[in-house]
Amino acid sequence: MTADPAHKRSDAPGPIRCHVITVSDTRTAADDRSGALLVERLAAAGHTVTGPVIVRDQANLIRVAVLEALQAGARAVILNGGTGITPRDVTPEALIPLLEKPLPGFGELFRALSFDEIGASCILSRAVAGVRGNAFIAALPGSTAACRLGVERILLPVLPHVIGLVS
Image 1 (cartoon, rainbow, N blue to C red):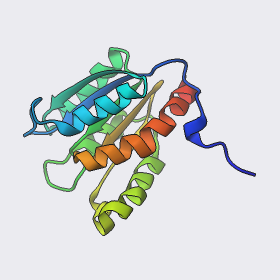
Image 2: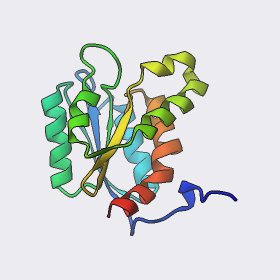
Image 3: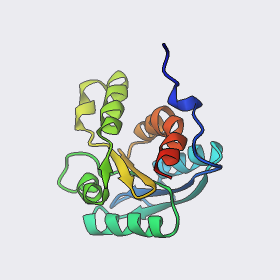
Image 4: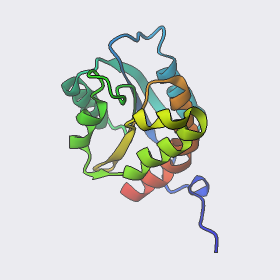
């Protein structure tokens, strides 16, 4: 018996309202390639996308940006940046209290797929995701390669199914 691949599911009615947030103390709208890539890929898949909005690496600012996006009607909030292990990397700490249902498989899968590209350094990523109410929240590392991997191999294939389940 074969499982129904998530990428063949279409449980969400119509395009999903997505919001992209880049977490960085140094990026600007002119050089935010990762945020731009996420917006481009999500829009190309037919979703309605706002952002990228750039937010400093401060937990309270990250939480406010996510909650504002949800209040504005976003059903998926995708963040990039701040998932490493430096003292300034606080995206997981900011998001975890907001998640009503954490999805540990997201980070596990991201790191497994990353291993093929970057080897053992994949353990330095703290990619995280979960659900709050009827919305999906995910945080990817800030590198463009990591965002490409995350959006193409994980987010786009499963996003409609996740939103369908929480609707």
